[in-house]
Amino acid sequence: MELEQLDVQKLGLIKLQLEEEIERLTTSFAQLRHAGTKFRASRLSVDSIQEREIMVPLTSSLYVPGRIADPSHVLVELGTGYFVERPIQAAREFCDRKLKMLKDNMDSAANLINQRRRELEMVIQTIQKKQAS
Image (cartoon, rainbow, N blue to C red; front, side, top):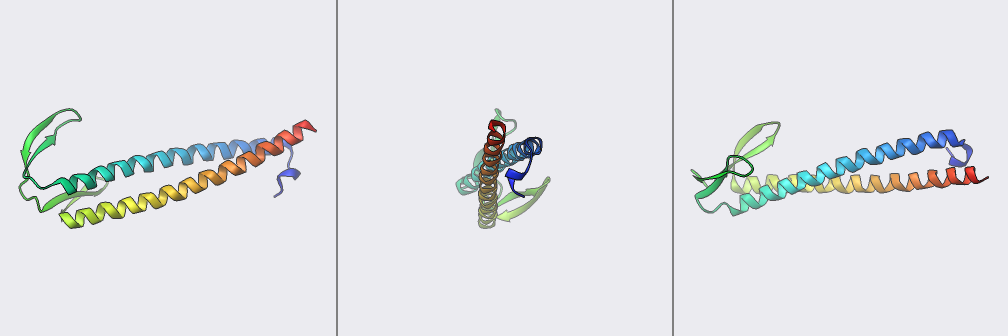
């Protein structure tokens, strides 16, 4: 539908919808970025497992010395609290797949955010034109 044919009230509703959608998409994008940061940290942790002695986090600020029983295998969280023991290489591949999926989703979200912003700008310009005349 042509924006020029809509009245200011309908354009205002479209503007509001676009602003809400941009806000939701921006929040989702931030959550994807945060998840990517966590997976990159996990990937680095998997790469750094060489020694049997490590510091084990009990809380966000309390660590205690610990020993890795088998440094060739790690526990990988699959999601929703499910863990599986995997060889180091399989854990690396899992992190890499998740990072690629997150990057693809972030790219899609960024493109959609930019598209919605352009649409919002067109709506705002149309409202301004109609109010000026």
